[in-house]
Length: 401
Ligand code: ARG
Image 1 (tube, protein in one colour):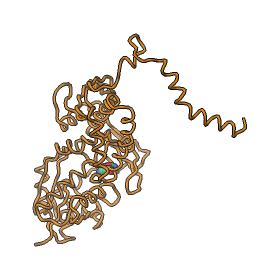
Image 2 (tube, helix red, strand yellow):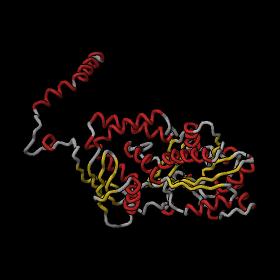
Image 3 (cartoon, helix red, strand yellow):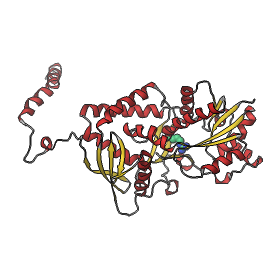
Image 4 (tube, helix red, strand yellow):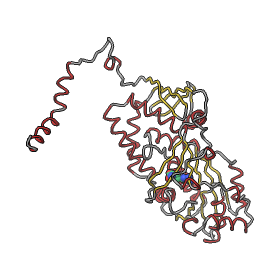
C-alpha cells in the first residue's frame, strides 16, 4: 500500500493544488480534511467535493465549531489573552484544534504523513508541527509551499494544466485566515506599513465612523464563562457569534498591528475580532470587580505569558496546561453581569454587578455611610514610605547635601 498523507484542506487555490502536488512529489495518496472552526464562507460539502475533484482519495469535513469555542476560545477568554496586549490570537488558537483532528484522521486512515499549506516564514508552520510532534510524534510533517517550493505562480500553472475545478482569478490579493474568534488579513498593499487599511478588507465589522444608534448589551458570566446575553442563555459558541454580529455592526474589534513573529520577522497584520474583543473587555472588567488585588496583578503577568506561549505554538506545552489550572482557580469567582455600550468602534463597560463582588460601597463611598477608618491611613502611609525615605536620606548624604 502506498503512503497516505492527511492534508489540512481549506478549499482554496494553494491546498487544492497541494493535493496533486504532494501526490506527484511523494507518490502518496492524499486524504483531505477540512475543519470548520466557524470560518463561514463556502459550504463544507462543496469544499469536500472539490478535494475529491482535485485528486484526493478521501475527503472529510469536521464541524469543530463548538469544540473550538469551548476548549480554545474559552480558555483564551479566561486568560484575557491578547498577544502584544492587542491581538486576541485568532489564528494561533485554531491551530491546535485543527492539529487534533488531523492526528485523529491520520490514525483512522493509517496515514504516516501530515501536510499543511503554510509557508516557511510564518508562525502557523510552527503551531502545526509542534502540535503534531506532541500528539502524534510518529507522523511526519510536510509543507509543499515550504518544502517543495510550490509558489503561487507555479500553483496557478499547475491548476490550469490539470484543469482543476478552481477559479484561479478568484484568488484574493490578501492572505486571509478566519474563524469564529476573528479574522486576520495580510499581504497585498498592506505590506507597505504606511498604507492605511481600506474598507474592502473587512467582513466581520462595519465602518465604525458611520452614524448609527448605540447598542447596549448585558453579558452574564459564570466562573469566567459567558452564559447569557441580555438574559437569554447562550453557549460559548453562540455568545461569540451573537457578539460578532452586534459588536461587528458597531465596528468594534478592528486592529492594525505590526507584530513580532516567532521566526523573527516583524509583519503587519490587520484583524477584526468583534466578538472576542467585546467578550474580553467585559471579562477584564468583571475580573477587576471580583478578583483580589494581588491575584489580579499576577493574573496580568500570567495573561501575557499565556498569550506568548499560544502565539509561539506551544499550546500543548506543560506550562500552558499549568497556567490554565491557575486561571481556572482565578475564574472561580468571576461571575456576574457586565453592561456595555457598543458604539463607534468601541465596547465600553458602563455597569457591573456580581454576588462575588469585592467592591464594598461602605469602604469606597465619600458620602455618609463611610465605614473606612481614615485615621488608620496615617500610620500606614508613614510605614509604607519608610524604606524609600531611608534610602533617599542615604543618597543625599552620599551626594554631600
Ligand atoms: N499573524 C497571525 C498569527 O500568526 C495570523 C496568521 C495568519 N494570517 C493570515 N492572514 N493568513 O497568529
